[in-house]
Image (cartoon, rainbow over all chains, first blue to last red; front, side, top):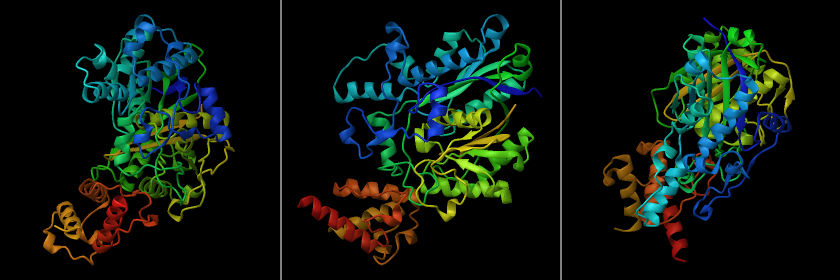
Length: 402
Length: 86
């Protein structure tokens, strides 16, 4: 089977507008969670989030194109531009015909839906903008990315709640590995910080009123974020032949379903996904140095994830570093795995492990080395990135230094 | 229907029990109300009494809102209804 490497990365997230800025924020332990600044925030009980502030779409897109671009698609496009620029790839001929785009998202153009429901139901308008449908569809992001770079291979959006990006990247990995494509653009995007988007989460009673403190005894829930990350996945030989700079190898992918509960996670399902990812990558547990945890900061996830890591790694678990960067960029829902893959790339490229910020008090049920409150300089050979979604859909990526 | 009966009726609906089968001294867990059903029950009580119940599923033990038994829940709802009227 072919080997798959990452030759480009791009991002727009609450910490920074690019990869370098995101690495700097991770290394400094900067937290982007703050007061939520949106219309009608006074109607919400959740008043914090990790937002992309000062986003000026007109700096990135021509004015006539903007009516077609929901915020999530804007984030995806800008991230994709950065990734493609870094890869140095030019898409023409056979490469353009086979390269595709697989992006994860949970809400798609939710802000567009929210705005237009408001105008029809609350404001009594009887006419909406003609582009509402192409703007709100979840596949708008991959479609626009494909058009921007003339990528005429297999493209689609993928939705599995909080595992959407990891499933998307896992599938793109398998497509390159199997020879379906030499290059794929993949990752995810989310922008659901609007009244309806937050109100829905509020109803579930799992949101923190003040901070995201994964694995801490004092954790009291999750905090939403927004943004995107996009990567260029490329066949190793293809990348080497053109002298591309290789950021890391995507070594394996594991996915499982709990088949048990629509919101409560299963330790067993998460453990099986990690085990399958390791086996797929041909990696032994002792070769993994770091896990970017799903680490939502909810009572249920962090306890269950810790138990799953202990199940898979046994005595090796005490040696592992495990951190949740959601403490800094919030939970990007369908886009979260993509932004979190940046912490894995940072570990493999720069030998710096991103911390779990907001850590206050150890929880006996979460007794792993969670790299509390301060980044750490350690060289690791291989890493895992976990995503465990509502509905019991688990997706774990394994990356290796190259 | 007084407040107590109303709360018990809401609980019975969520637990799929007959209101007569609910013992006020019973812990909520014994009614077969799991974590997801509890969130739905809290919502149903908020809607029924037009109150806001301070409930975070991550922090159920540390809450000021007492969910230990049916009786405690009746008292807590009664308290919130009184506060709203004041």
